[in-house]
Length: 468
Image (cartoon, rainbow, N blue to C red; front, side):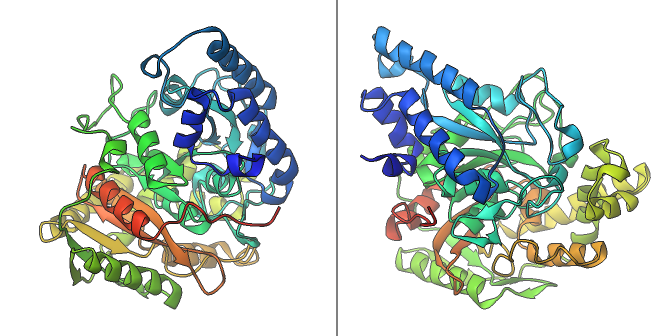
C-alpha cells in the first residue's frame, strides 16, 4: 500500500496494520506530517502541528512493538494511530487558542477529559485543528488564522465549528478526528467534507474537568471516514467520569459491534425542510428523498412528517450566544459577529427563562419519537457557501443567514438526542451530499446500525478529493 492509500485508510484498518507489523506508528505519523507540511497551507486544517511531540510518541510506541511481545488484548485499541484534537479542547503542553489570536500563548497544564480517554486508547496526537472563534460559528474564518477550506473544492467552506477536524480527515491529514457539537458543529463540517460525524446523546461523553457546556446542548464526538471508525471512537470517548452532572449507562454492546448487525424494520420519519424556515434547497432535499427511498427498499417503514422548531428558535439563540460571554474574552479582541453576540448577552434571569422554555419545547420534540424510531433530515438548508461569502455582511445579516442555514441541527442539541451525519453522494456543485439521522434519546446503537446499513448499500470509503 502506497503512502497516499495509507493516509486515506480507515483508522480501524490502520490499527490492525500496526498490530500486524505491516507499518509502524512512526512510519504512519511521518506520512501524515509530510502531508500536513505539503497541504495545510492550502487547507487551513491545523492551527498547531505538534510534529516533535508526535514523532517522540510514535518512536516510543514503535519501540514498544519492536521489543515487547504483546497480545492484541494487552494493547490499547488504537495503539499508534494518529488523531487530531479540536482547538477548543485543552491538551497539556500544547497551545489552545479557541480560534482567537490573543490566546496563541495560552498553554494549558491539563488534558480535557475526552483527551484523557483518547490518549488512553493509544492514539498519537498530530496537532490542534481549526475552529471558529470560541466555536460559535458554523464555518471557520477567524481573524488571524487562515480559513478552513473544503478539500473537495478549496473555494468552499469546510463548515464548522469542527472545521479543521473534518477537513484534516477528508484531505488525508489524519485518519480520524475529535470534534464537538453545540448546534451542528460536528454534523455540519462532516457533511461539508463527506465524512461520518456523530453527535452523541447528552451524558454519553464527559465534559470533565468542567461539569457542563451551555446547559447540556454541547458535547464532544467523533468524525471519521466510516461508520465503524466513528462508532469505535465513540466507544472510547464514552463513559462516566466522577462528578459528571448527567451520564448514561454503558450500552449493552459496543457501538462498533452494532455496525455488524442488520437493524430490524424501523419506523422512519423524514422531512425535507424545517418549519418555519421552509424547504431545504434542491440538493439537500435530493439527499433526503434518495435516502428514504433506499431505506424503504431495505424494508423500513417510511412516513413524511412536519418538524416545527418555531418555539425553540429564540430560547436556543439566547442559550447559545452566551457561549461568547462565557469565553471571558473582551469585546475588543473578538470578531464583529461575536462582538454583536456579546452585546446581546442576556441577564441571568433571561438566560434561565430561555433554558426553561428550551426544555419545554425539547420535551415536545422528543415526544414525537413515540410514533417513529428515527428521523431523516437535511444537515443544513442549502449547499455550503464559498469561503468569505458572508464576510462583508453586517453582523445582524450574517446571524440571520447562519440561523437559517443550520436550522435542521440545533433541535437535537436542545433535546440531547443522538444524531449522525452520513455522506450519500454529491450535490450539483460537486460537493459531498449528506443526510442527518436523529434517534431517540440514548439510542446511538439504532442510529449506528442503520447508518452502517446505508453505508453498505451505498459505499463511500473509496472516494477522496483530488487536489494534491
